[in-house]
Image (cartoon, rainbow, N blue to C red; front, side):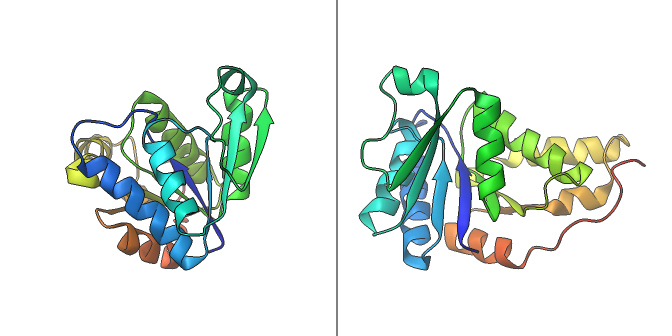
Length: 188
């Protein structure tokens, strides 16, 4: 794995656990020589992860929209960045550049980015391992909802296995490196 797309909150969340995990992920990416690809801002957990990767000597590439760049949200210390027209362009570019995708805790934007990538993965349009960094059980309600989708017949059970869920950044990266592609059709 040479690059990892990171979706995460542009806010910090409550308490220190989210910041600590974001920093640990950034440091782990730098330590392993894995480039971080993300939304390009200095805000919230996005900025924390980028700062930690950069502090560890890592490469960090930001993909930011024209609107957010115009508001001064671009992280000033990135290894490289690009400015795209829309969020749709940003998501496509990030997914296309990455060997794997990870969502940290975040809000509706983080969830939407991850869900879109998972949808593309299910349809066979994106062949990229995906993971959730489950800091303090943050993603457990989402995982429970996935299990509910399976129980109600809207999702093949094998598609739950397409998402790696780990609380530790190093274990998450290790699991993504050996993750196997789910080949079960989306349709039941």
